[in-house]
Image (cartoon, rainbow, N blue to C red; front, side):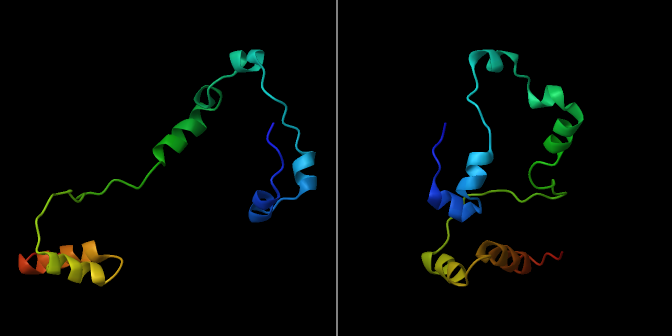
Length: 100
């Protein structure tokens, strides 16, 4: 059984009283032998959770490429802060005369 950790408790909003009130006995070999998979016990809920994992699929997903650029070009985009890759993509779209 884990010991009460006051630092963790303070960070996560529970007290020693909360900790002591929870009854969580150690699992024994018989308990593990009789355990069933979540998907077996709650198939519809498991399927729903499986479908909602991750980001939705994009109609036109971006493609990862390896590209050699001049160091100063890369640094200029990176210096503009978070989202520099999207801004670089937009600059390339403009240079290629592509519209959204």
